[in-house]
View (spheres, rainbow, N blue to C red):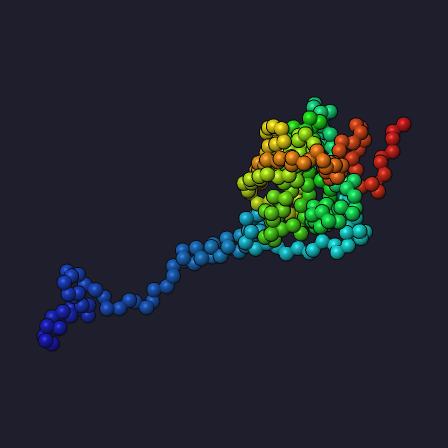
Length: 295
């Protein structure tokens, strides 16, 4: 037995592996060190990693806000405080300066459209018990009354809405249910305007979310009348950002109840807003005086 083992040992100290026609070393030299190339690669990877981390911390890509959104302070507690009023006034100024709104007002067919601010003349006793005009109104939420540009024939409408950070589901991303609410109201305005007695209810609403809607921005709701027939009207809509990027698509059907002719639609008209006299500017609130006439 010992003689058989000795025959497997090479005089140089290496051993023959049984069944293989080669030699195998019994140990690895201990003096092997990383080469200079490996050290350079390690340094380069570290440098790139540090640079990417720094750039991401300073100006993160929007996708990272889904994973680790940045915290933000809440809106002012008192919507009537000087801070809140100043914030709202700054948003109104930003709204009136939006390039999209400015361009629409300068279009050749501009005289075929009118502008209104829904809920502007809504009775206070009704406003306090209304979702979008009451509970969701204020800085950090729906700070501004929406501005609606609608065709006089009520076939199309474009609504500008500012959505604050207090309307989020995931931090920094507007809640999908809130978008459904805004779409339902925006679609309803055009649909109901095409019903015989201007009173209607939502029969169906389908939506497709195409991209996240980030908070603290103006969004644009575009509505078109698809068809109207008797006590039914069907409309389509899409929510975009001010750059035209599609966020949500929707389609809805509204019907007029059979007893609608027995009801008054004055409150509905107050909520939706009626056309102002031509050449009269639409202002944020009744407390803002009209601009002085040029002599």
